[in-house]
Amino acid sequence: MKNVIITGASRGIGFELIQLFAKNNCNVLAISRNIEPISNLKSKNITALSIDLSIESDFQKVVDFVKINWKKVDILINNAGKLENKPFSKTCLKDFTEVYKVNVFAVAELTRLLLPFFKKGSHVVTISSMGGIQGSVKFPGLSAYSSSKGAVITLSELLAEEYKEEGISFNVLALGAVQTEMLKEAFPDYDAPTSALEMAEYIYDFGLNGDKYFNGKVIQVSSSTP
Image (tube, rainbow, N blue to C red; front, side, top):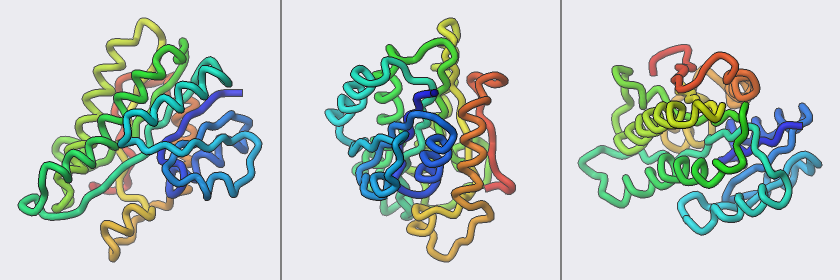
């Protein structure tokens, strides 16, 4: 059984992902601030941990769980995201800080803390956005979000190079618009062409098999741009 950690697991793509991995005989550590939807699944293969990714001390809960129960992590999917939609002129330092805490700093810190548990063949998949791809069409109002998604692309490319001798793979999936609660909150009138389950099925397969073909790569997963 593979040991899989997924952040942002209580809704949207993350919620579908934890169910896909659990149904296919994987041990899943599901991380979210709100764990009630996860607990309600009553899956023997899923452990829910209430973690606030903007609070540094919370990360130790993940380390302690892995150290006691698993000893190794096969797949980490950095799926959690925070989106702020407002004109750049109305943003402040706090807006950028809060978005970067979840979208960038948490990705870096969780990955760093789990390094001792990654073995040869482990795969770290970070969920980015087409908005973070240089040259792509951008949504106005997403200055903090899109720039943060560009930052994790560069981070993952660097980590792939730094840990290639250890056999740990780091890849990024830059997603187009997906019909999730987060998208609906930011853009109430926008209907995305892809459902959360459809995207989760792609990410599930990539998490299991993508490292056989890719390392340090950014895969654009979108039927349109953005």
